Figure 1 (cartoon, one colour):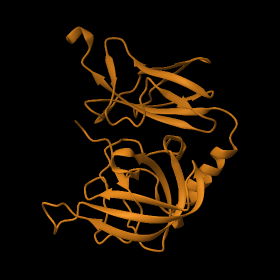
Figure 2: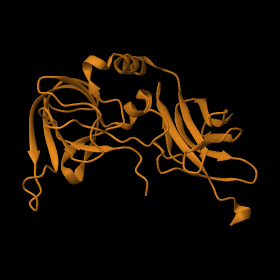
Figure 3: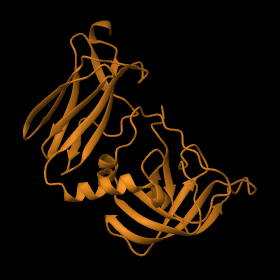
Figure 4: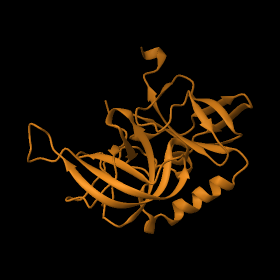
Length: 241
C-alpha cells in the first residue's frame, strides 16, 4: 500500500533534537480550504515543552516526541488552554522544526488510539510567522456564504502521467456538475454547499480513487468557502479484464 502523506500523531512540546522531514506523495499541495474543514481543530499555539518517548526494546532510540502547547487562539473546534501532540520518529514528521517559545498554526485531528492530537506533515501547519497566507484564507472562509470548489487530478499509472480529456461528474441534491480534465490532468468544479459523489468517466476506461487521494470521491462535503481534493487513476479497462 502506498502512503499518501505523513500523518503525525502529536502531543505538542519543545525543540526537536533532530531536523524534521516529511515525505509527501500527493500530486497536489494541500489546500487550506480543504484542510481547514478536514481538521477537527485549528489553533494558534505556543510550544512550551518537549519530551521524548523511547521503545522498551531500544531505550537509546527515540520512538516519538511529545509536544505541549499553550493555545493562543482557536480558529476551528473547541479546546482548553493546553494541548499535546505526539509525533512519531518516522517519515511522517512535520516539514518544520519545533522550537520552544515559537508560535504555530496547527491543523489537527484526534488520534484516539494514541490519546493525542495529530497533524498531517504534508499540510499547512507551521510557524505563525510563515502562515500569513493561510491565515488570510481562513479569514476568507469564515466570511464566505456561497458554495465551494472540488479540485482534482486524473492520471495513468499511479499519478505519474496526467490524463487530459476525462469527463468529471459531481452529483448531489442540488444537481449534476461537470468538467473536463486539462492537459495537466486537473479539473475544478464550482458547486453549491452540499454532499456530492464524484466520478471520472471516459469511454473504454475505468477509474478508481487513488490511495493518495485526500478525500473520498464517493463522500464529498462542501461547506461555504470550502473545497475538496481528489485523485483518480486509470484502472484496467473492463474490456481488458
